[in-house]
Length: 351
Ligand code: COA
Image (spheres, rainbow, N blue to C red):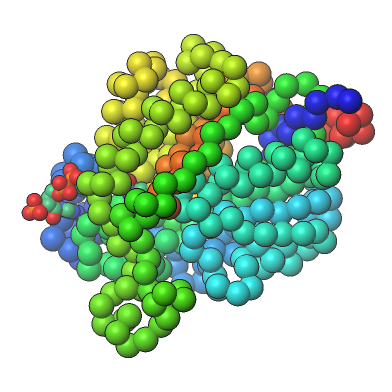
């Protein structure tokens, strides 16, 4: 029996056009551009407008990913959507995405906050590695701005909206997810919580009056957790993939705060040139942060075929999720769609 790997053969991102700068926020809450940049590195973020939903953003990113892979929605065997800001509690947004894409396959949602995309990627990988499925779409999407109290300076400066998607297909050469590290420490869950609207606190006037329908955060505690877990999980995932730090061509950390990333770089002793950062432009897009960063790194030509990329995330739960991914398919040039489609056809036929 051959080992089946799951290579990333398509990728795409969607971010709303609407840019909200720190200067815009200065007019809404008691904050300043300098404070936000010094404490977080964030200069601006994208905020969805009325016609955009979690579903529409996920579909836009997915269509791009399918196009890069040279596939159509009808080719998909499975869709996994990671989000903590779904359009509805029921039905799951994964089914909305499946219908809007015109796919005819199973679909489910993963809800682990900012680590959702990596959890979903690792889950998608399992279906490919067992031979159960051949084409899996994995989406990280978040429209967190609708769950933010725009009068709360502790949270409203940090987050942004967006979506990123990848298509996984089988490969017999080592590609895609080479190793992973997943974890959860629910005892710390209260530090990043949206208390209202679920079974514990069903919607009521009191929920609205006390602002429990908004995301609340103990920033200092989450900061401490993040700076500890980023280096720890990076070390663990490298161990699981049988690699050391020098083998890694690029580290894509969850984009929550530039200071958290800087501290992780220091602890790890990794060359900062190998670490991708775009939190300045988008803020923390939660489950969308890693796939958006991955797509931007590809767009900037910073990931080449055979590169090993470490994706390392932390978030609500509190959870962490990391994966080392070996890049397989070259970023498509203008006519790259044919290239990817040809490689894929060959590989998928063999497996
Ligand atoms: N503008 C101006 N002042 C602000 C502010 C803002 N947007 N937000 C908070 N402050 C104030 C605080 O009220 C506090 O004032 P006080 O001392 O009078 O109480 C002061 O700034 C310092 O707050 P502190 O919490 O010590 O700041 P910090 O250096 O820890 O930075 C965060 C705050 C939120 C940026 C930081 O804790 C953080 O990034 N935490 C992790 C958040 C995260 O990543 N969440 C998502 C995880 S997936």
